[in-house]
Amino acid sequence: MPELIKPERSELSFRRKMLENLHTMSWLGHTISFPKEKWDCFYQKTVMADPEERFYRLIYCPGCNDFVGSIAWMLDPETGRYEMELLIDASRRLCGYGRWALGALKSAAKKQGISSLWVRIAKTNTAFEFLEKYGFVRAEEDESSYLEFCEL
Image (cartoon, rainbow, N blue to C red; front, side, top):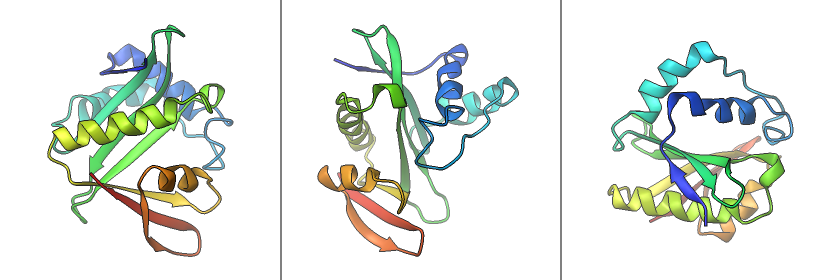
């Protein structure tokens, strides 16, 4: 069974590996640079943040003895919505980690008193089908994306 791990700073190398992997980031159409110079700021602002504002965990698979993805939420101060992120390494997809991670993210958010999670997804990303299968509902759409939410 996977586990959520609050990462050590050095373990952000896994986040870097995912963000800089074109297969993992194919849904976005490009990679995201995450050099070590950004790790301290990310760690303090995101990993060590008050969970009422931000939450970030890596997904660890004991059977694989490796990380397989990450989950996060962030309070958008402009909308008051908790926006989520779920990212599974491309080499670990279609193994049930996404389903498990989404359940773990919802559970952690609910324990924190969060009543709904929101996500904006590009229409070219098939993740909206996955999210709708697990309780997300389309709230809005524009030419390029869907805005979906899930009541907890």
